[in-house]
Image (cartoon, rainbow, N blue to C red; front, side, top):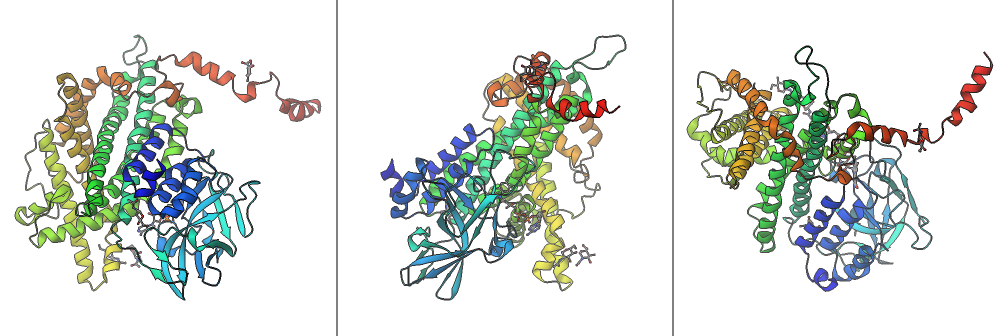
Amino acid sequence: MHGILTGCFNLSLLFHLHLFLCVHRERPEPLDLHLGMFLPTLLNQSTPEQMDRFFMPAWNFEVVGTYAQTEMGHGTHLRGLETTATYDPSTQEFVMNSPTVSSIKWWPGGLGKTSNHAIVLAQLHTRGNCHGLHAFIVPLRDMNTHQPLPGIVVGDIGPKFGFHEVDNGFLKLENVRIPRENMLMKYSKVEPDGTYLKPPSDKLTYGTMVFIRAYIVSESARALSKACTIAIRYSVVRHQSEIRPGKPEPQILEYQTQQYKLFPLLATAYAFTFVGQYMKNTYQRISGDISQGDFSELPELHALTAGLKAFTTWEANSAIEVCRMSCGGHGYSRSSALPDIYVNFTPACTYEGENTVMMLQTARYLVKSYRQAKDGQRLSGTVSYLNDIGTRRVQPQPVSARPVVVDINDLSSLVEIYKLRASILVELAAKSIQQELQRRKCQEEAWNNSSIDLVRASDAHCHYVVVKLFTDKLAEVGDTAIHSVLSTLALLYALHGITRNSGDFLQVRSSFLTASRIKELLSQLRPNAVALVDAFDISDKTLRSVLGRYDGNVYENMFEWARSSPLNATEVHESYYKYLKPLRSKL
Ligand SMILES: Cc1cc2nc3c(=O)[nH]c(=O)nc-3n(C[C@H](O)[C@H](O)[C@H](O)COP(=O)(O)OP(=O)(O)OC[C@H]3O[C@@H](n4cnc5c(N)ncnc54)[C@H](O)[C@@H]3O)c2cc1C
Ligand SMILES: *[C@@H]1O[C@H](CO)[C@@H](O)[C@H](O)[C@H]1NC(C)=O
Ligand SMILES: *[C@@H]1O[C@H](CO)[C@@H](O)[C@H](O)[C@H]1NC(C)=O
Ligand SMILES: *[C@@H]1O[C@H](CO)[C@@H](O)[C@H](O)[C@H]1NC(C)=O
Ligand SMILES: CC(=O)N[C@H]1CO[C@H](CO)[C@@H](O)[C@@H]1O
């Protein structure tokens, strides 16, 4: 295996490492960063000599590492990072420093207590010039005693919203010297005399980011599938209130409002699962092209993964909370597992590319494509709908004077109006920039003052892509029964998106029809709802939810769970003797 690894950078191994994480990681752990970032980064950016020195020891957990990029003062804006690595040719070492309080590394998982090494991102200075961010392997702790090494100030950043199991850490570097050979030098290099050699191509920088964001799309699907499984299973166990007076209490899933809360989310979980599969397949296909030196599809994939990362994590994040509240009071108990799913998932909106910033990246690509289409270039891929803009003369304001004929039972017709909405919003955003420029604003100010429109445009574009991929997926399904239920889900997904964004879809004259069609779809899905969540095939062991148990035996197990709570270990808690009893004896 070692030989294969040192040969050349192996994308598929990186992929499998991440898949391993995806399958085995149900809760965040201190070693996630070691497996998910430290090893893959070594794999990609190490020289063969560094592979020998670090990769196998890391593979065997002698070297335990993390990825330290974010600082207290900067996360998103990488050029703002302040940590320095200054080359000293007299000793052939880099001198690493955290020159300010805001430059202290902050957040890396496993940094506080677990790791003995870190890949540290720092501004490289050599021969009086700064060459920007580069990655350095910095030993943090003694390999025998685990004590911090001289000049290393390291610790845990304290309690958080969640991720309690992970020691997200801080790191302050005080004149820490590391050998020249500890800079990751597969691409750019510093020679012994301090000469800097640039990397041959910066196109490669997309690769890892694209990969990780594609993987987060699958995580969105996964987290939402879990939340839906719990909420829908519990909704058939729970009986509450009455629909008709005097009749037995119905399952709460019989309430139309409960179905309306949950079934669109179930449809979303399926949609995201298919989007995740598509991203994975596309990535694998394109990574083949990349290794052949063909980067033509990379910009589009880069733009798409950024947007879909943001779109799916935002949707899943709010959906998980809806699932929790749909379980009433018991949803607030940790026994439901929903609070943990939420707190563990929600940082995905922030890390690996803050969501708004991701949406704006996608918008940049959309606006660029829009301008190309205006100039008469033929676009391909997911933005090809912008080709029609010149010919169709889409109005900037969706006016109902131009009704679009939509068959609300026909998915391909719905895909068309999602396209239309996206093209209208992309055009609006592009025109907003144009107007700002006409008011003698510079590009950057024009961009800033159009960014609300830009995010909306990206959101509409991503929404279109999801509806399209869901629809395309149906063509692959042979079994008629499965095809039928998946079509119902896809239709619900598309129609629900229209009612939620009805302002954008004003030209669809059929919004009343949409609402009543949604009600029909809810009833149609009801008999299959439990089977549809069972089909996610998430075991009880993985789900860890009393409410979402496969056997539905909720109440007895909830009592068991509460009884085993630490506070019940004694019949009379020590606090009684310590506080309550003295207080009462005074009475
Ligand atoms: C649980 C968790 C684990 C983490 N693990 C690691 C790790 O292992 N290693 C590591 O290095 N880091 C880690 N991080 C840090 C994480 O990567 C950063 O927090 C993330 O990149 C966001 O950057 P930021 O904190 O600077 O947010 P900011 O960029 O400060 O975001 C704050 C607000 O500013 C807005 N904003 C910023 N820039 C723009 C812009 N250009 N246009 C419009 N709006 C903008 C954002 O939209 C947001 O609303 C972790 C964070 C968390 C929460
Ligand atoms: C590999 O390393 C290069 C050099 O730093 C980096 O820019 C790129 O993102 C990485 N590529 C992949 C596919 O991981
Ligand atoms: C960015 O836009 C906001 C809102 O219009 C405005 O308050 C801010 O001054 C703008 N910033 C710059 C640098 O133009
Ligand atoms: C931002 O744009 C709006 C119109 O879209 C304009 O009224 C406003 O003056 C602009 N603000 C700035 C700070 O340029
Ligand atoms: C009343 C009751 O069920 N008490 C239980 C509290 O929890 C401990 C174990 O943690 C049990 O042994 C008690 O029976």
